[in-house]
View 1 (cartoon, rainbow, N blue to C red):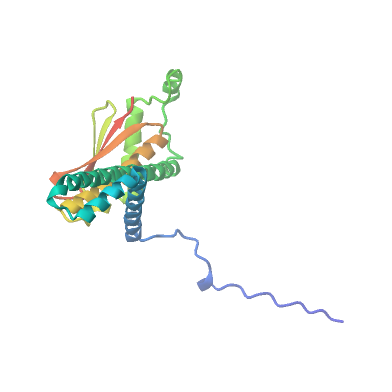
View 2: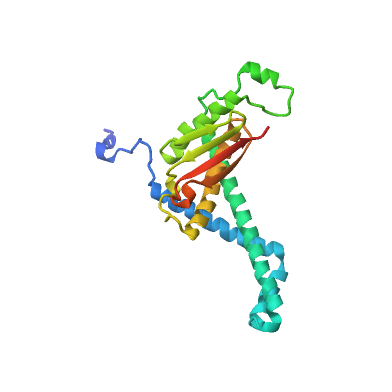
Length: 244
């Protein structure tokens, strides 16, 4: 009896070989994703605000709708308008805080990956001298090196460009100026609606900066502002104040 073995499978052709290179994602897709995240956060925070205020706010809105805003109910209508404004402010503050926390998480993890081969920590002498204190107290030179890393490698990874200008007083205060932030370049200038949208969006890079610095052992407060009086929405500055 003769045994016959099955023929070996044909070798895959080069055209069907799996790709081993990096996967690229369109930058526009990320911008759309960020816009949807902001919209989702705003809706969720508005729901949470209504939930926390309870049925009283809904009852006042219903009363105003039923009366139709007649003269004798002007006081009620004014009170309802004020409550709506308060709800809008509370909702906006919650949304900004949540967006900033999302940015913090992303910045912390991204910096952990980018800085794993960087020696940005304090020298051994400085570390031993500050061992008796309640937490890290990086020197001014270490802070400056960390912020430089943030302006170059970190910012290039996120925005494909470096920070345009870095200013510091060497006392824990840094100003990072970006004359064309990619996420804001499509917003029309001198438009109040666009300005409000830009302020909401800037909460995310503020969180990115704070998270990256936190990963490097630096606790800081980060705020943002517009350059050129709002004529160019993409021109903005980030103010960093290191906590002492």
